[in-house]
Length: 245
Ligand SMILES: Cc1cc2nc3c(=O)[nH]c(=O)nc-3n(C[C@H](O)[C@H](O)[C@H](O)COP(=O)(O)O)c2cc1C
Image (cartoon, rainbow, N blue to C red; front, top):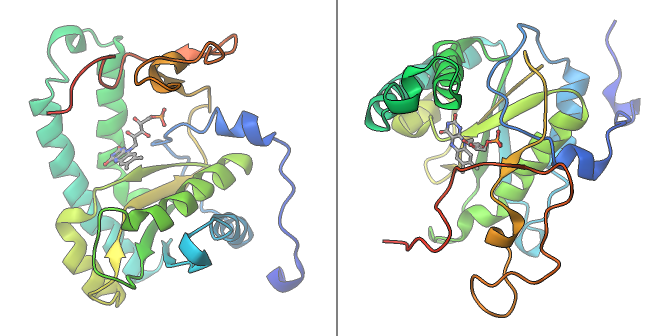
């Protein structure tokens, strides 16, 4: 049965906004299930509700599922992803130190990444969030696209799906543009893969709030900047006081 999306309202989500926000983790393992068109519509509608400078909405989303072109685009990015990850796995010494213990967080992360890039061609949906440039490239130009990208991830989370942002398209950007008729001046900002998570959602882990929030003196947290109970932390990211070089 075909659903008339023009008369179908956006789905109801039961997850609270803040609860969803705190548990929208990078999801890199998907069940082998297509995403129904109605769900894609609801996710992309939610994504495009994002703010942008002067409400110009310079974002465009290329959504690829199972067409011939989609299969080719996924394969192109899969090859790039495998080579980027292989290099990172070696350079960042994922298999050394604590990584030699298969139960360590480092080894588990390496397994998830390996599985992700090895199966990239099979992701249920591949989204290319693009920026239609209306002025010369500048460092802030992504600012009118990334809120929409995060909205996409949050909407996916609210609907029981998950996804992850990557930069794996970069080595094959020209081939992707040729394949998908994307004009040369359009900037493919990132890739987002989406699907039903094979594992569970869970709380994101970040550095302690006082390391991330300052008051009127740099690196001095206000007294109220305290993590609520149950907050999970991570060691990832630069330690407090480290300098940008
Ligand atoms: C700008 C940006 C680029 C990213 N690039 C990649 C990438 O190339 N490959 C990948 O697997 N994840 C990528 N990620 C996902 C991050 O690794 C992930 O969000 C981060 O480790 C936090 O994990 P969590 O969201 O599960 O807490 C990227 C995220 C952002 C925001």
